[in-house]
Length: 178
Ligand code: AMP
Image (cartoon, rainbow, N blue to C red; front, side):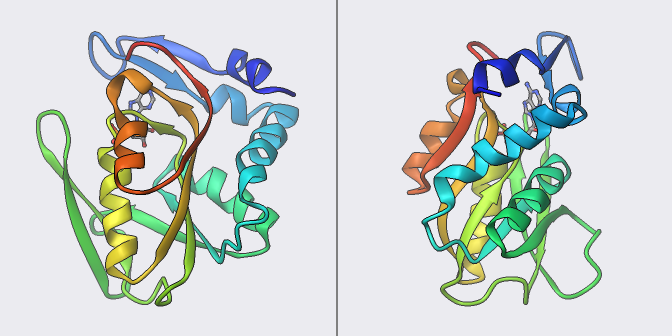
């Protein structure tokens, strides 16, 4: 399946979780067997020859995608989780949401110094989540080779922010507006 066909499998829910937001719901894509396989193949493809040594997935949809991509690349999977979920020693990074701040965490021993890392999530909007995850990975000594998403919302500036952080950003499709 090509990326246009994959795009048609994403469901858009207006006014979720609040008025004015068009929520791009990827559950309809990942529950489609052929669609899920093509999504994983197309997201992984740019990274086959890049020497990736670990896939870092962002809770929660980044776990579904990142786990399958790590398997394809033959490397391990490392979770970035919301505050308070990881059982061992952690480092934290807070980030700004529209009306509040939130915190992401990683285990202190989850990345080796100089390890080549691919960061994965389902969607990039403002890029705040990616920025926080990238700070955690870099604080642990990781070398971020790229970031992969199904969806880019370019009007919200996240993919530009990603490039300004020196992280090549790959997404399968874009939706105009927010
Ligand atoms: P941001 O930090 O603004 O780039 O937001 C990215 C995170 O929020 C991702 O984990 C997405 O799953 C989620 N997200 C933000 N906006 C949307 C949207 N319009 N539809 C679906 N998920 C979204």
